[in-house]
Image 1 (tube, rainbow, N blue to C red):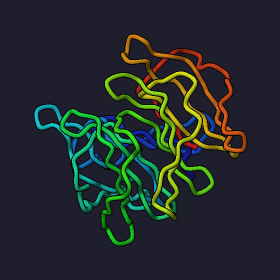
Image 2 (cartoon, rainbow, N blue to C red):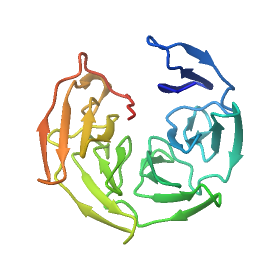
Image 3 (cartoon, rainbow, N blue to C red):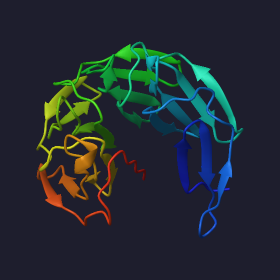
Length: 231
């Protein structure tokens, strides 16, 4: 079966198959329930990193779901429990940027080697923030938007070869809890909120690395935040 979409709802994993209208089926549940976790795919596995538990705070657990066996395995925890982090992968390395640690925005930046089950601390974000978007374009990581006591326009680019960050053109409108993805040589920043859930936006901003500039894209049909997208 070819997968078209993947969603994590609470502790239940749902997969939409390749039928024209999509059919959802229930799969093996996430071993530990949590919210605001980071999720990324590497190969045939889905990695769920960190998150938030009511009453216990930030979570450091890392669990991976094998789509070929419908089974979960527990992996090395992230050294610092975190929620609302930006998560993306380049080949077999997963990157975790920012987030909330003990309720405060952090600049921590981690790399996880999926082959060796090992974490490494990398050069921190230039400024701490949470609820940001993280995506990969042409081998570089783009950290976009987020919240640091209020929504921010921050946009930085990380080069894994030099373990260094550079600033890029800021978002036209600062926001957090947005969806960010790269496709066809450009980055799309979709939806999100300005400071508060009462100020959800329907914006789509498109970044072109060739000109280091943003342009406006088609608006979402409805304003929303806490969204996710995948390519």
